[in-house]
Amino acid sequence: MFERTIDRVTSIPPLGPGFDGERHKAALVVAPGDLAATDPFFLMADDHVSPGGAFGEAHPHAGLETVTFMLNGTMEDTGGRLEEGDVEWMTAGSGIVHAEDTVVSGGMRLFQLWLILPEAQRNMPPRVQVLRRADMPVHTGPGVVATVYSGKSGDAAAPTLNAVPVTLVDVRLAPGAVFAAPVAASYNAFVVVVEGDVEAGATTEKLATGAVGWTGPMGDGDSALRLRAGDDGARLLLYAGLPQNIAVVAKGPFIAGSTEELAGYYAAYRHGKFPHAGSMRPIAP
Image 1 (cartoon, rainbow, N blue to C red):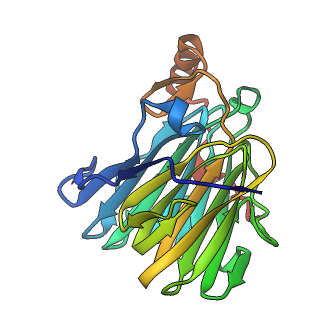
Image 2: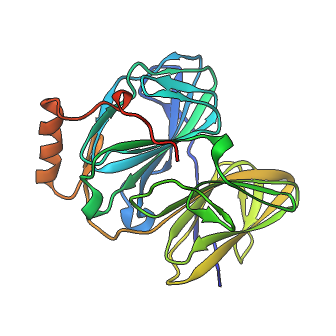
């Protein structure tokens, strides 16, 4: 088994203005524009809203998956309600409209990740999966609680449907606890420290709250990223996925394989051909 190292470290930038007025602040955990380094992860935003109330407007997506992780508070729209610790895994595929009549609680915080889709699945029928924290499998060890939302960690395997093979694990570590997080060697991966601090990888890279540590593909087989919590313990999210190694074109809420495909998404949306997420029955793995 390969022992992973942290290849590069970034930080969540200071919060700036969001799209919904003064009460909405946001930052990019993963910035777009360097897909060769972040593949299959296109971008990830860190959204904060306070006070609560109506939030945003209905909007479309196509050619990608969004993974919305509720860190704090709640969010509710015509498709249902997400509580703290829940995840909505939305495969936009050929096109979908979501976030209709959205209402959030005060102090809401979420991470929203955009994943590119494989060429063969880019225009698959859209689907929505709601992953309830209470229903997700959990891997435990001395001072370790790892909730698996996608992929697997040890004997804990999530039933989540993936177009791109992706692992998503919420890791909570007691002070000084050590966890060797399993990651397929072929995956690109990053960890985001939500609370506390850890020493990560073979070189014990120190990652504090807000740090993002990346570890790149290592070939075939199995690998592990060793994490050791500091004196106050730690909470972090581990994202790992198989790079797709394809060229994409992005504009607004769409990711396509060509400008012609991108134009087709815009035309389909204008002609009302995208289904609405609120009218679809969410899949509960």
